Amino acid sequence: MILVCDNLNTHTMGAFYEAFPASQARKLVRRIDFRFTPKHGSWLNISENELSSMTRQCLNGRRIGDIEQLREETQAWATASNDKQRGVDWQFKIDDARTKLKSLYPCFLS
Image (cartoon, rainbow, N blue to C red; front, side, top):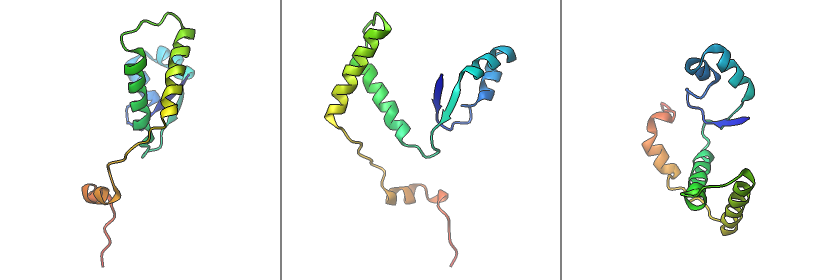
């Protein structure tokens, strides 16, 4: 199984050893391929929004009988969604970042 994680400090193999007995944690960790997003990977927010939209628009309140029906339903939703070609309107501009995240930018002495 591939598990996509952001870089939160709890998203590690060690967290399994904290939550489960060592033998069980080892079995679980061996089955997982951890993939970490870039540290500044805003695309993860977009992915989370898409999954949330799919859940609300396609699956909410429905009972899906089997995996094949689930694939068909989610594929139909994805096709319709992709046909709309929506974009992301980033509201956080560079100048705003420099103001709000001032402490993260280097300070050069003259």
